[in-house]
Image 1: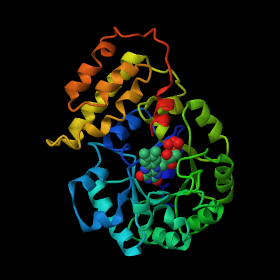
Image 2: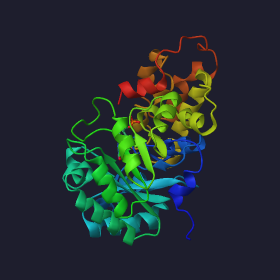
Image 3: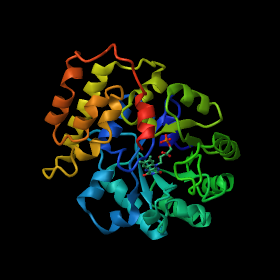
Image 4: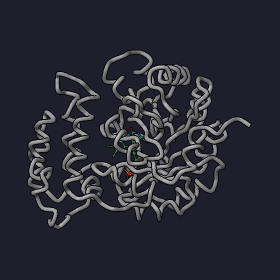
Length: 336
Ligand SMILES: Cc1cc2nc3c(=O)[nH]c(=O)nc-3n(C[C@H](O)[C@H](O)[C@H](O)COP(=O)(O)O)c2cc1C
């Protein structure tokens, strides 16, 4: 028998998976999640066509690992077999992924026309895409779906994907038409988990370790956390080790500062466009009970700006006694 693939190996440990999130799950966020014990992380989605046809630096940044990164899955979107196969080969050569994932869930119109959740309407196209991806790599190939386009077809789609050779299927428990409204349907996710032989990862609305444990009981191999991990990498530590201590403000401020430092190191971009601006929406989530810091945090440009904005909390002088207010996860949810 061949050695277990990446997913089978990682699923031997307890823990949760960091969700792919365009604009969020970049190398610095993945690094913090991995350090806190995430089972694996998934890149932001990358256009297969863009990857094959051009090497613009923004696309490279989407896939590029941080130094020493292991356990990062690269997610591709697209709808053409040859393009996906070529993109898999390129991603493997450039980005050293642990596995490759097909995006079948993005509801954004510009993506829909070429793949993403559009594939839920023509799942036979997706089955061929998985076969094409597998023909280009020996690594695990997985797919991430929503329940369906506007009705739930998830069991049928998951069975087709498994038959095509997907090593794992992630299910976000909403239809594409729902986008991010309503509540993720974990009963539907459980039905998928019961209907296929490959591991199923469940995704949707997990904001706390307690919720994660409840959801994990529905038969999934693991749960995935997206918005609830923004400004809150400790959620992975809680699920990997059982240590649910929520760090105090000083430690959270230190992590926010470290996130900014990693961001600066990774992007190394003198225009400032790719450096700290994308972090402006993230930094306040580390310290939700300090709304007075928000204005300064959403206008940072340099690591020094972050240090200055957080100076009071970093020095331990600002309010360890303060009422906690909304958790970082609740904050992340209401601002996504
Ligand atoms: C800002 C944002 C960007 C996202 N980008 C992607 C993506 O690139 N690929 C993907 O498969 N899902 C993407 N998703 C969906 C998430 O991976 C996840 O399935 C969804 O947010 C539900 O999980 P959560 O409630 O834990 O956030 C994105 C979600 C958000 C909020």
